[in-house]
Length: 88
Image 1: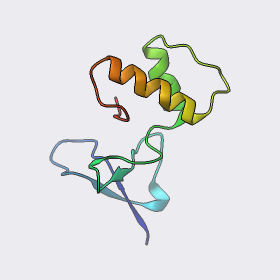
Image 2 (image 1 turned 60 degrees about the vertical axis):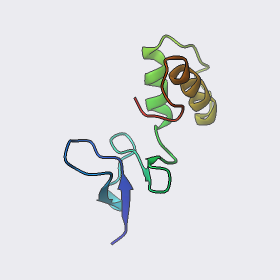
Image 3 (image 1 turned 90 degrees about the horizontal axis):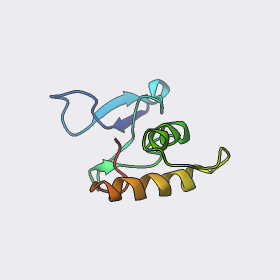
């Protein structure tokens, strides 16, 4: 059975958690990239990025691509003092 490494969602889960590929849900899980220790692609989904941008009152086109949304999100996180590409 194929598994996917995802970022932990609770304490004491270590650096990553393995989930069955068939159980992976990008609305809940964030992929983990072992080499960098950060979330890997796809990271936040387009819907999650839109939610994060709305929380920050950042305007975007409704049909904006995930890449455009990610760029806007990364800029917002950097302006807040975080690292681009970090999940909220």
